[in-house]
Amino acid sequence: MIGVFHPGTSVVHRAPALLKLALLAAFVTATALVVSLPWLGAASVVVALLFLVARVPARAALRQIVPILWLLAFAMPVQVLFGGWEAAGVMALRLVIAVALAAVYTLTTPVSATLDAMQTLLRPLRRWIDADRVGLALALAIRCVPLLADLVREVMEARKARGSEGSLLSLAVPVIVRSLRTAEHLGEALTARGFDD
Image 1 (spheres, rainbow, N blue to C red):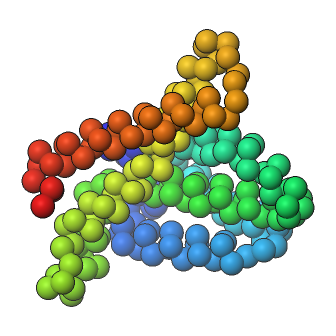
Image 2 (image 1 turned 120 degrees about the vertical axis):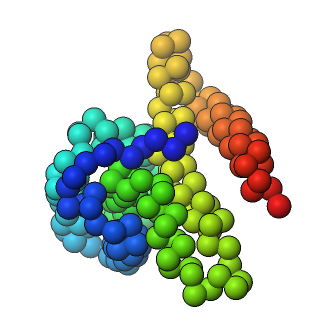
């Protein structure tokens, strides 16, 4: 399941995981506060440059980002209806930037580095917090974003192969069912490794 990491020697790959997590949180928070389309457009350019600097293959990057565009295809008309074109554009850019930044992190950082970063960050609180479990939870949460995107893509490809377009419900139900099955298998794997207590 955890196999998104794309090995490399770029400066982004070599940056400490803790630094990347801090920058990820700061950048996502900043874009959540920005309401200007030009500024969000500039942020999008910065994210695209990050992919180039990290030398991530275009195909690997697109696999992480394209599925969110299908979600936006349904969400944007609703946002246009209730908030107008500018609000819809701001919402869409914020979401794409956040997903793209998470993709940069997962593509350039092994899960082991994330776990180590969380242990370092939480070491002063080890009396109250199990850093290993928090690190595992964070790694799983980060990994589940592209995993869910893959599930949506696979369901859409299966629908296309059958020649059925269907409704949003016909897309949502198989995605939810497969997500629950994946979560169940993950839970069983964690239980087998002693993470059930």
